[in-house]
Each structure stands twice: as C-alpha cells, then as structure tokens.
Image (cartoon, rainbow, N blue to C red; front, side, top):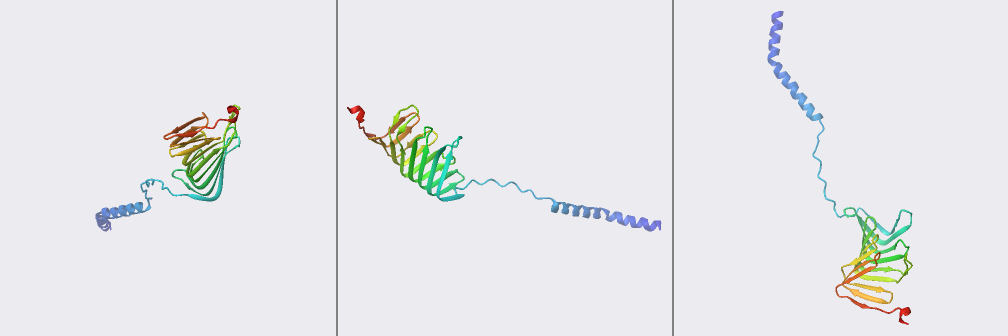
Length: 207
C-alpha cells in the first residue's frame, strides 16, 4: 500500500507544475476579463461655431445691482454661439439708460451682443440716438444721432466707435468722417479721415 501511494505521488509530482501553470493561466485570464479597461482620456475638441439655442421675436433685459433697468434688447431672430458667448440678432433695437437715466436707442439690420450685453456691434444701417437732456452737473445736452454701416457700442464705458464712414448730427450741427471715436463720459469726440462739418449757431448766442 505504501509503495502504491508513493508511486501515485511521484506521478502527481510530474504533472504538478503543469497543473499549477494551468491554474495560473486560468487565474490570469479571469483577472484580465474582470479588470475594468481604462482608456486614455479623450482630447477636448475645439468648440465649433454652432448655435446652441435660438429665439424669435424676443426681448432681453439687464438690471444693475439695485434692480434699475440698464438695457433692453429686442430682435426678430437671434442665435446664441457658446464658443464666443455672443448673441447674433437680426433687426435689432436696443434701449439703454446711463447713470443719469438718459435714454440711448440703437437700431441696425444685425447686431452681435456679448455675454453680459456690455458691448454691441451694430452692422448694416446702424443708427444710435442719444436723446437730449441734462447731465448730473446740470448742463443741457443736445440730441445726438450717429449713422453708419458699422458702429461698436460699449455700454458700460459709454463709448461709440466705428472704422467705417459715419454721419453725426448734434442738434442742428452735422458732421461726416471716415472714422469715429466718441467717449460720452469724457465728452470727447474724435473724427478721423476726411472730415466735413456744418455748425449752426445757437439762437441764444446769435442775438
């Protein structure tokens, strides 16, 4: 009996490495199948210039910290582009109030409005009108109107710029130029290029 067990053990000893290798192979196979596959992180694709939403016959309002109305944007159609955070508006009309409550109106065939409506680019038949009034210092301000095929309006800075031919009307005065830079806060107007103007004396000063 002892001899039989010894012979059986010797035979098992011969196949034991093969059995262990088989078990190891099966274990490795199971481990590979059971381990989650970690793929390399996908590279971020550059944002495409595609609209993520659109509006029709809409209006958008912005308010200051005290709840006072700062601006209103009206349009026939608008598309928002997330890559630039801009609103592309057809047949736009904008009403904006400065710190003194004076109204400025802007219209154009098309407009590009940035995310917080602090800058507006008016494209095609652009027109900006600042109504007459009295500033915080008590000075009378004449009605001003700007016309061009392109006007850039900085609402917060109260600045108006254009690199296209412009026409300016201030009361009865009229000017034309190739370029314009108007800072309403500092009340500085720069007309560049071919500048032409007509000044009409005030009735109060002509007497």
